[in-house]
Every structure is written in structure tokens, then in C-alpha cells.
Amino acid sequence: MKNLLKVCVVFLLVFTACKENSTEKKDTKTAEATTSFDSFGALIFDEGAIDSKAMLDRFKSLKVGDTINVKFASKIDEVCSKKGCWMKLDLTDGTQTMVRFKDYGFFMPLDAKDREVIVNGKAFVQETSVADLKHFAEDAGKTKEEIARITMPKVEFTFEADGVLMKK
Image (cartoon, rainbow, N blue to C red; front, side, top):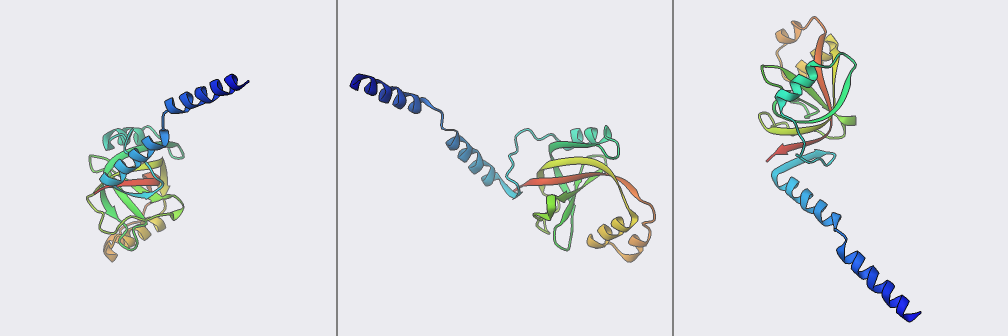
């Protein structure tokens, strides 16, 4: 009986010693992400992010109401000047996507314009009302004349981010 107990203890020690420590790898990955990027919202990593041109192609394949989960990298063209509650990202060729943040759970720094980001979340195409377009123009600091010229709803590429990485 003692020999069986010794064999079990030795087997248990060998088995646990050979087991890969995934927590250690995760902590290393988290440390690497936090040294290169500022993180907002849910913790995400830069791996697997597509570029803005590929994201534009995906948006073009969607119809109003379609939704896809995706992670992509781009440059910030504009940030809400009041509290950072939305941003517009470049998709190449002058096309942009409006990014809002899941449940208004986080905001971007007001001085984030022209910074490189990786966003993770849901991409979709929607029709934005005139009232919302005017509200966003006001938040962006547009003049009264520019706001008054907004008279038609707009079909837009929209994104709801649950996490954002911004290059330091």
C-alpha cells in the first residue's frame, strides 16, 4: 500500500511539473500589450487585426442591418471634442467609420486625433438620422453654417468597440 502511495505521489509531481503554465504566458502577453499601447475598455491584443483597407472591403460587402465581429487597425481622424465619446477612423480613400463605445463604458482622450488604434467589436452599416448627424457635427465643433447644411440622413459604416488599443 505504501508503494502504491509513493508511485501516485511521484506521478502527480511529474504530471504537474510538466504542465504548461498558461497564466505565466498570459501575464507576459498582457505586459507586452500594455507597454506598446494604452488600453481602453475590454482588454484586447493586437494579434489578428486587419488593416483599414481590408476593413473597408468588409464594410462594402454589408447591407444596412448586417453585423460582423472584427478587429482592425486604423488612424483616428476625429474625436468627440466634448468628452471623447466617439471617434471617426480612416478606412482609406477618404472613407471613414464612426466608432462608438459599448454601453458608453469608456471614452478616448480628447487629443487622440491622428493616433494609431486597434479596435475590437461589431461593424455594421446603418442609416444615421439628420438629428444625430447635426448632434455629432456640434460635438465636433463644426460651425452653425456647416450644421445647417445637414439636411439628409446618411448611410454610414459604423462600429461599436468593446476594446481599443492606442499606440503610445
